[in-house]
Image 1 (cartoon, rainbow, N blue to C red):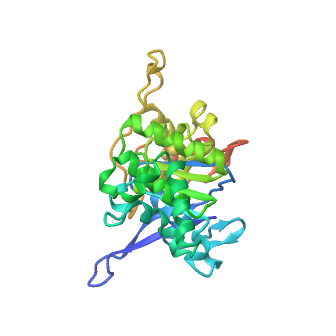
Image 2 (cartoon, helix red, strand yellow):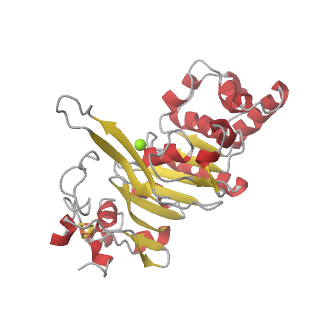
Image 3 (cartoon, rainbow, N blue to C red):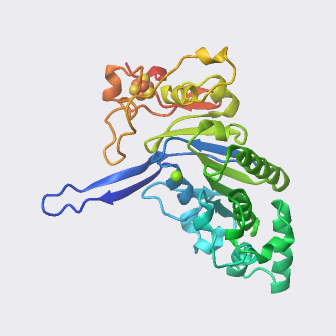
Length: 317
Ligand code: SF4
Ligand code: MG
C-alpha cells in the first residue's frame, strides 16, 4: 500500500545538491493466492526494488506491505516471515554459492530455520531436486557443473524448501536462451498449480510475462502506469507506454505487423530527477500541454484495469 523507496544521493555539503533517487514512488498492488502478477518495465524503473521490499530484503521508505493481512514491519524477525516469502534471482551464477554442493544449497534454508533432522533434510532435498526435474544424484555436485537453465532449477528448488506461499521471481529467465526460457516458465507454472503458490514475476519484456501472469502491472519510473488482467492488457492496452511496449514486440503475423507502431523517443529519464507532471511526458507520442504539469492518478478504466494517463481522467481539463 503506497510503498516508496527513496535512496539519498549527494551529501548536501559544500553546496553540493542533496537529492534522492525515487526508485519506487508510491506503488499499491494486490497479489492473490495462487495467482501471478507480472511486473514489467525498462531497467531502472524500480521493479527489482519492489521485489526486494516484498520479501523483506529491503525496507520501504514509506507505505506498508501486508502479507495475509499482517504488516511485514510487525514481524519480529526476517526469519519469521522468510518462510512464507522467497525469491528467485536472475543471476544463478552469483546467487548459488560455488563452494557448496547443490544438496547443501537447497538444504540451507532448512538448516537456517532448524527444520527436520539431517536425514529428513536429505530426503526433502531429493524430493525438491525431483520436483524441479533434476535427479537426486545431482545433489553431490557443484553449481559450476550445471547449465544456466539447470542452475535456475536449483534456485527454484531452494526457494521451495520452506514451502513458501509467495515467490518473487526477479527476471529468472532473462539470462537464458529462448528455448530454455519456455521450459523454466512451464516448470514454474506446474509448481504453482500443484502447490497453489503466488508469484510476483518481474521481467523487462512484456512478452515473457504473457503466459505466466493473471494480472500485469506496467511500471514507468517508479510508478505503475497501467494495471490490468492479462487478456485485457494485450487486447486493449490504454496507457501510451503500454502501447509502446506492445508495439516493440515483433509480431509473427504479417497482417498484424501494420498495427500502430509507437516508437519511444530518447532514454529513460533519471529517477533522481523525474520529469514534472506525467513522468512519461518527455517520451509520450500523444502528450498534451497539461501533461507537463499534472501528474495523472491511477484511475479505474474498466472493471479490472487502472490507468495513470490524463487521456482517461475526465476530472482534469
Ligand atoms: Fe502521455 Fe499525457 Fe497520458 Fe502521460 S498523461 S501518458 S504524457 S497522454
Ligand atoms: Mg532488475
